[in-house]
Every structure is written in C-alpha cells, then in structure tokens.
Amino acid sequence: MIHAAPLSDRLRREVAARVGPDGHVLVLDRSEVGIRRTRATCDDEIAAGMLSTLCAPVEDFELDASTASFDLAFACRVGALDGRHPHLRARALANIARALVPGGSLYLDTGSPLRAITLG
Image (cartoon, rainbow, N blue to C red; front, side, top):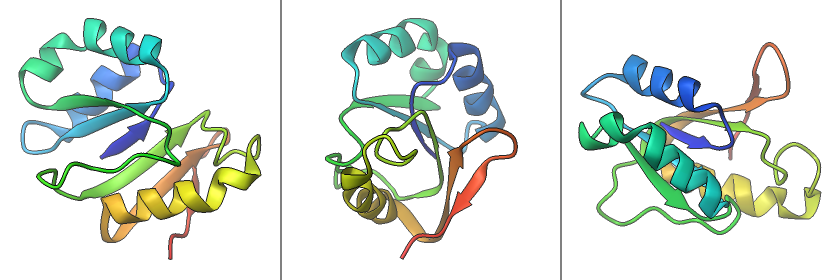
C-alpha cells in the first residue's frame, strides 16, 4: 500500500499492523520533516520491514525498480489530488497508477467515507 502523507503516526502504525508481515506500507511525503517524524515514531514497523518511507512529491515520485507494485493507495491532504493544485493532478494520478498493480485502488481522504478515484 502507498500512503501519501500527512497522517497521524498512530494511524500509520495501525495501517502497517493491519497490512501485516506479508504486506508493506510505503509512506510518501514531500516533507523531510514528515518523513523524519514517521521514521522516529514508526521505527518498529520499519525494522520489521512492514513500512518504509520515500520523500518526494506525489507528482514526481517513482518507485525503485526493485519495489513491487502496490494493491492499494490512499491519499490524505495531498494538494495535487484534493483540488488545491489542480495543475498537478494528472501527473500525480499517472504516477500512482504506475505504482499500483492493474486494477489497484486509490482512495482520497475527503472526509468520511474515503472517496474512490478511478485510475486509467
């Protein structure tokens, strides 16, 4: 699963626990501060290989070639997706689509419930 931050550290740990040892959560955040906070508060999950971080804007990120595609992505307060930076939306969606398996899902936090975004 890809998660574009910010999200509370408690929720990051909870998501990693729900994914379990056979899954993996990638926290993508454009903020170095956010990445440092995630690394500090989720060190057990990182050490267990359940969670990793990548500091990059969603509209510019690429997965390393050795990283498997993800089944699910969700975004919380991502300006390229929530309407604050509409000129970046197409690039962000294309990058997320490339990081997901065919038929993978993207959910955008716009309140309750999450909103499913169709890719492709």
